[in-house]
Length: 274
Image (cartoon, rainbow, N blue to C red):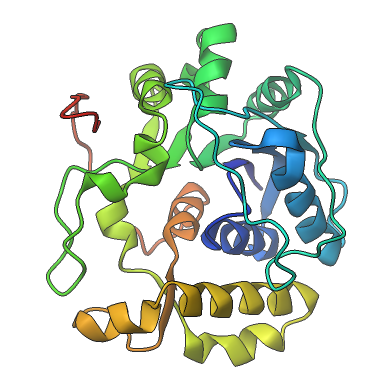
């Protein structure tokens, strides 16, 4: 049994929901806890609870964590009031101060791998308040930009790396503190896609699949993703979304499709980019 703790900013880009759904269906994986970040008022935690209810996994503990960045107290709210993404009836589920850190510590005590698929404020606060925590467990994160995208993919740069650039102070803390750190860099995750051709199978898979299909279809239309797909040879013409976060989660549970490479890296600030 592989134990996983998910730290997420679920509720914005749709890949967080897909990543959580993938873990829920992965054999021999136990999700020990879910903490949410960028979560003012606990609405992201409410979204995560709704997702778990759709598949009957209501026993998984959830705690709403950091509301703002450690860098500049920036706020990033999730998608609100759009029934195509989340029911309007859902209300925020805020947690007591420190609850997210307690849940992270509990998961570490159970031998869980921490998977960070949002910005890193919760993980950095855990290290600041309980020094050495990130050195006691494997940590897998999405983020980091130290190579160029492959030919045929959008030639984006580190400014597109939300998880790191949204809270660079938190990112530097995590990179300095995690002794067993695996990074799924953004250029690599650009190879993983949700396509319009995937939607019929998703919709036929049950209530959660219907929710994911709706979110993916809306995201693709609102961000003109098919146009991006047609403009790049390595992308499908029916592109709906990049699946950044499922890559990191798959790596955390031991997916054989990932190639791991050991690297020695250091952080550098360059015109406000880390």
